[in-house]
Amino acid sequence: MTKLKSVPTIEVENLVFGYPQQKPILRGISFTLQPGERVALLGLTGAGKSTLLENLIGLKMPQSGEIRVQGKKLEEATLSQARRQIGFCFQDANDQLFMPTIL
Image: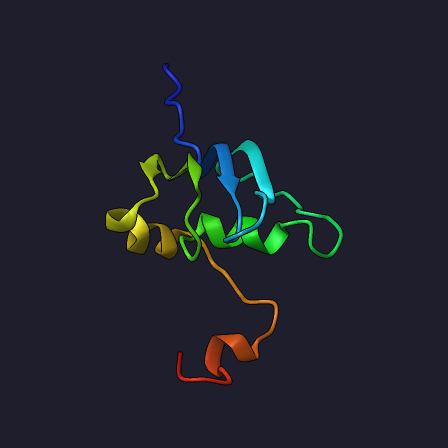
């Protein structure tokens, strides 16, 4: 019996992201999450944990590198599909519902 190879849940290759007028805070990030794997993302305040997760769901787009969710490259055309696969809660629950300005 042949075992089918599963498609990784998330693949990140050489991700680079930085905010305007700043050096990149994410540089050369690469990892693969297989179906059923559980991981913890730990780091000091300002280390880039939230920024990485915001890249994974397309709230921020990397300057270079590639993100694939269920084997599909994360880009404008596949954002809605990726967001159906990844659950995301903001650090501050008020940011999900209420913002101080209309923008």
